[in-house]
Length: 496
Image (cartoon, rainbow, N blue to C red; front, top):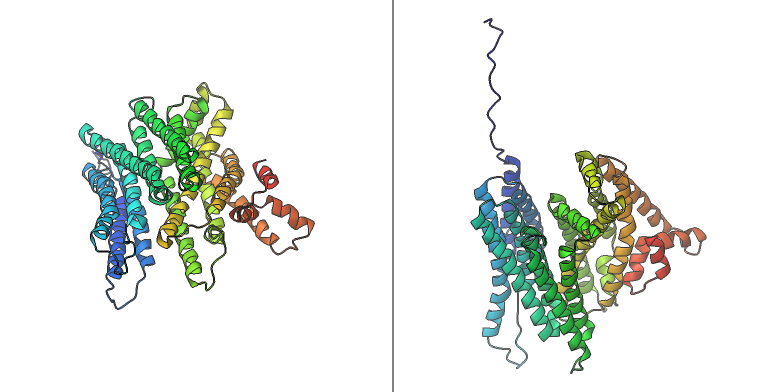
């Protein structure tokens, strides 16, 4: 054998990917969460440091750190670390949420009342810490149940999902039916969190086609029961009117539970395909990244909103929600979110070859396209639903009722104006096999469209060009909706 020759050997031994990048991101996120929590604790204890660090820095550190931990939990391959996330994050965080919500209430109830004989103040940390612990625990539990291979630990995760979800739903609904003010604050958030846990529970059971069929029916039955009870309390006269707003909120939540059950159980082609697309969102990091960005923008707008309310020497005129939602950051947020939501809808199907497989099923192109549109629009509305939690905090902290009815017109307008934007992104996704190209095309058109709408503000408002562009402007429609005004003509134009 010559010196230049070599022995032919078998292929190299394969080793499992250690996920060093994901672990580095997770460790960095853990440090950010610890530092953020330490800042909040020191500020609450009024400890003087050499450098003054506000609570906003602490909250930002926790948000960024939790996003990194979510990514690590989704990408981790080691079974021990996955279980650590499942038990500490998925079960420990909801337990911490229960403690933070109930312990201050117990301490407040035990303390003696004010010397002037006034009502005893009851304090709870459900806002802002308790609900955030429940929400973070939901994400950790979803990834834990999805990746766990041993039956015993998988069953523990399912029990946590179902138990926590049922507890949140029952406390939220029962408390809301008994005390109307509870439904407007804690009860509504608990019910929504419970719905998230219960839907995840049915999904992890294999969907409504398998073991999740009866739990899905139970979700629908609970929703119908709450709807009927709230309707009955609204009809029967009482000392105070119940329908507006507590009854309306409970009926809406009950209807959401019932529709979610129908969505889980139904065998209609378009429902099944829409369910498939929604699950695809939550099986990728893009869903959690978009929710995190929305929460970050909402937190920034919330700080500005609180500053406006606190620094104003005169009462801020209603509707005050206009100052929270209406900003350039809200507009710029959807410039990035719509391309991210729609880039994979058809482009990824074509790239992986699953589109041809889907077309071999007994479905036509119409339900396939409509299901992708509906799924993207539902997730688009879910992104904006995060903002409602901050308004609930305003309601609890101030103890005053603000004008909430413009929120109904605003969220209806969001759905109407979001549909054409999502449809545009779906169209560009159908033109290519590359997600990045589809996102870039959607982004360019979004930027051009918004630039034209911003230029319209400098035109004379009575000019024909400004009038036409204002009718096409979703920004103008947002402002009108937040002022409590709905223009049916402009909404029909947006839908068309």
